Image (cartoon, rainbow, N blue to C red; front, side, top):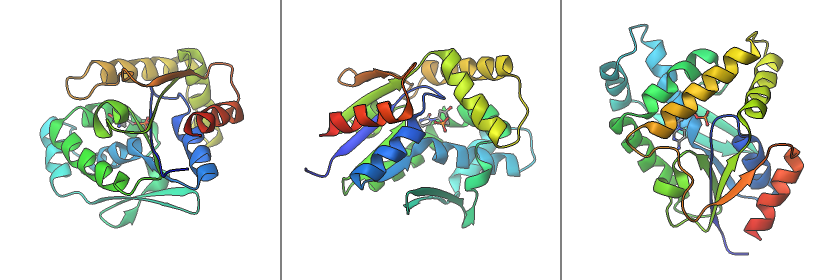
Length: 218
Ligand code: DC
């Protein structure tokens, strides 16, 4: 099989990173979690301990060094040489990441990095604008989604396992707000690319979704 470029987009909590990671492992491909890169910029913005404004975000992104590595089936994100993998999925980072991701200077820098990482092929990249903007020539394009209730439940379970206490209703409202912001922003909004295959994972097991993705690649 040729070294494919696989693009997976979809809203928050659709399970993209879980299934994309498993599919990448099965194919022996590199997995690129682009959401983690926007989260890294959001994380560094919060580290400034200043009110979060567009000006601050633009200042932060100007000289940030984001490094994304996929080794031994695991993604590591570092900012300016510090491993922050364990610190980017907090409610605080999720709370500002849509504001960060809608700014042109942020997207330009991240998209540039993402395209470079995909140059050699044999990659599976997930995000919001991968099929529509970052890798329009991808060999396989998938739009992964699930009902808002199911997506909220999945994220809620994930956060509970990490020791966070958050109400399911509040989390569902937060996810809906983030979907709205990501879909309505001006630059590269979340959309299903015209040539992407829709995969609604509501009621599907992780393994069923992974198998569906592998079938499309084969
Ligand atoms: O997939 P995630 O929840 O980790 O993504 C975090 C945020 O980053 C999400 O709210 C939208 C943004 N994002 C984006 O704008 N473009 C991408 N390619 C990936 C993520």
